Amino acid sequence: MSIKNNLYNIFGGAGRAILFLFTIPLMVNYMGVEKFGVWALITSIGNIALMLDVGIASTTMHFVSEINALETKEEVDHKTKMVIPVLLLINIVLSAIVAISFLFFTTEIAHIFLSSSLASDDIIIALRWIGLYSSIMLIQHLFSGIIQAYNQFLIVNIIKFINIFVINVGLLVFSFLEEDFVTLTFYMFSISILTLITYIYLASKKLNIFKIKPHFDYQTTKSIISYSGTTWVGYFGSVIFTQFDKIIIGKITTPEILGIYAAIISITSYISSIATVGLQPIIPKLTELWTKVKTHRDEFVKEYKHAIQFNTFLIFFASLLMLIVYRILLKDIMDINLEVYPDSILAFQLAIVIYAFNSLSIPGFYTLMAIKKTKHIGLWQLLGSFLALYCIYLLGQSFGLYGVIIGNIGLVITSMFNFITAKIVVKNPFEWLKYIYKPILIFSVTISLILLVANVYLDAIFAMIASVLLMVWYFKQQPELLNIITNVINKKKNEAL
Image 1 (cartoon, rainbow, N blue to C red):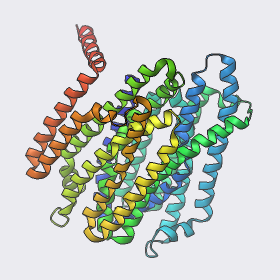
Image 2 (cartoon, one colour):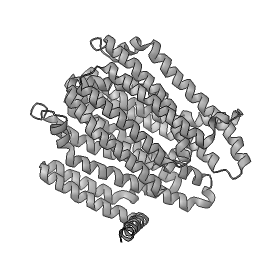
Image 3 (cartoon, rainbow, N blue to C red):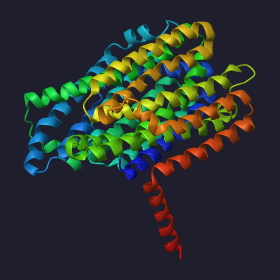
Image 4 (cartoon, one colour):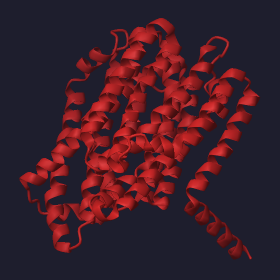
């Protein structure tokens, strides 16, 4: 796995996470818990449209990476004519379905997902704009996938960071000015158009998209549809959970619980998001190696092991940082009254732990995509999503905020991705646990101490000690990274002299 691309994605993901760590709590502060809960419902309904995303970014990255692995220009040109037009056609059709649905059936959509008291005229208009925003996002995924297939992760991360920065700062300003939801959603749509134009321009420079003469081949089209379809089932399961959880909670609990849940999960979900963007470079690399697995198996296994270890380090390190600052986020930035909502403290801690362990499945997810075993993704992602939603529904009615947070643990079943990939790659389904048992032990002991002691200062000390131990462990596993850092430092010293 390219360490350089890894770092690009890590810093890009970390930058976006830091933005959300500031903007989401401040939006909760400016809007109030109840209004933020309604905002979370609006964005969730818009994001449900992303269920039509058939894993287009990953599919595009996969097939364009296969094109790049071809040896002759004639093979590249021939394959490009067969692959790119199919990807474009699929993406445009899906985007059009989303746009038409939200343009002409917004009222019906609102009444399906919202209670009658919430389905006001301004919220219906806001849903229309958020739906159009989602349709543009679908097209963005295609062109960003093309750029990433050429290992241009730095460019993609810069664009994503600028996009998120502009959107979040704008939302923060409009929230402070107490603007309505229509203004917020229209602003998001406008910025997404500018971002799409940027992606199209950069992708066309790499692939001359508009000069490709389509050549539709039945087998190639079937292969793309099959791959994207099975990948879609996995993404479908993920979107079902990340959006329907709030809709279910809005039905069975109070607006206050929904608002606090949405605020907490919006932040803790970035544990998995940071790991996801950090591991994206694994797809082109493993895809290329898998096509030559008979002669490059050792190199493939090395990349696979690194992905698991890197992911574990990243999610546990990010989780420990959150355990240091979570109280500041709740009390000082979100301005949540901890005397009125005392459950929010333990709920936040539990959410951090649950999302950390749920995120261990990410390397298996990407490896299965790289080796075209995507049917396993769909099966276990759907099972995990439905199990988590059922747990949220069941526990939320009895235990309120604690129940809906603990219900997220249902997604831990997706760790089956790692058992399946380990069995395929190294012939032992438990081998991946041997790679990371030390950081799991460090993190588990630290969490146990934090929950038992329940002292804000000791919590921070425990988390910092564990973070240092994780760094020591990771650098021992990856001496190459330590050498790179040392060389950069020495180079800077020599330049200074």
